[in-house]
Length: 243
DNA sequence: TAGGCCATCTGGTCCT
DNA sequence: AGGACCAGATGGCCTA
Image 1: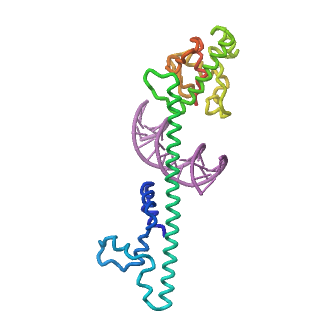
Image 2: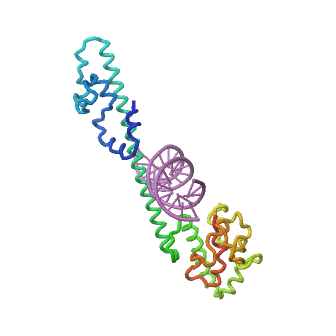
């Protein structure tokens, strides 16, 4: 019965260490089956390990009944050993998998940090969350690409914006294309018109936008895209989708 | 105290 | 078979 392992292996470390000394593995159950009841309650565990398997005194007891009993005991011990082996094998694989997973997540976080480091920084050194970093990077890349495109066209910022503005929109750029079809997570669900969310904060600074509208409003450090034409900066509410 | 963010563990699935 | 990837669960920490 693997019960002792199940109940004692509460942590990975416990189990990892217990699996390392497996070759000499002997469960408490085996010890109890093999040994006579201890004379005192505080018997040291060392004596329990004495005697190799098969060297018990049962063999010098004559009688088929005793033989059968001994066979049954051996079968039981073998089953316990194989189950424990299986359990500890699974355990050590799990521990290794956990370790790999941890490393993988650390690498992912390192890559995220590298991404943060090339994004425009903020005066208050606010660390972007993971999701903010990804969204901001996406928008930032889009904004840079847009800037390049305008530069290629040789258009001044104002004229360029004229061409960019959708007719139904005020001071607003079209949103960057969604990287996925999951419109909800990129905030387009609420804004069939890309300007819907931005209209309020732009027209009325006293009523700041909620996080459902967009994350960063005019004056927010996130507006400071290096290299972006100034007049384009004021259009950013529409291309910083959130939620 | 509730909610957000994060790290970690875990089991399942896919790939090599 | 073993590793990579993924998503769900859980618990800790922090902030409004």
